[in-house]
Image (cartoon, rainbow, N blue to C red; front, side, top):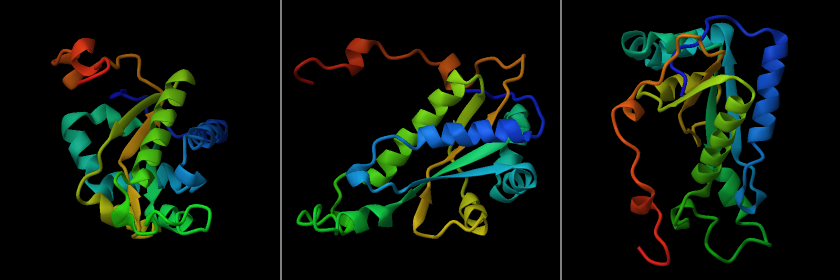
Length: 190
């Protein structure tokens, strides 16, 4: 994850490149082909306003100021209604999944998470720096101000931009060892 970006606005070619990455990222699996995953791309003044309104800007200014140099921010969004509506259709009905409470795993969140992972991998492959982070309590209001309906859940945010030359790994990955494979991969049984 990138924590120091080269500050600067996106030009139209870079913005088009990011839109292309988002187009590819959204091709993650979609339960019932419900397609309830959305991405909200913020740049320029809208990005600056989001940093301020969400509380994320103040936090990063204190803890990781290099993140605020990101040229863009993507908010992955999950629309539960797209899934419950899809599973009320005749070819999917009969399992009770038209009611969100009956889903053992909320696939609208799963699908949005997979699309977000796609974005992170695609950004890395394309030479972009990226940082996924959770949204702060104040973020709900900031997301609603951007026109996102209340039924749509933001999963976090992905800061994107060009990685600064002095960006170095930091955070928990530098202080905690990765668990050995035999602790997390179970063969035949737990």
